Image (cartoon, rainbow, N blue to C red):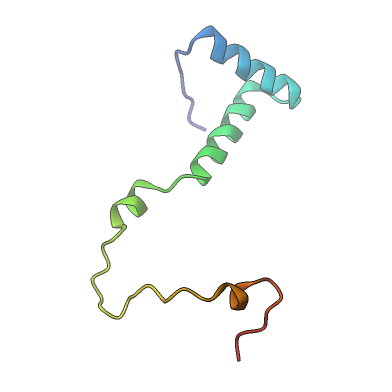
Length: 78
């Protein structure tokens, strides 16, 4: 498995160590989990670059659905 070496300030290191300790895990596992969570919540560069690139005229934003039809529990699809 690849390894990574970082230079970080003492405050961040202290937070990482405390987080790992509170989660009863190693610093490596704790940081890996934090990075996985960060990357899962953010768009990849490729997806960000493709935003707005569809030129097909049939691809249009639908009209807004009236709130009453969009409200939870409403059966508006036939």
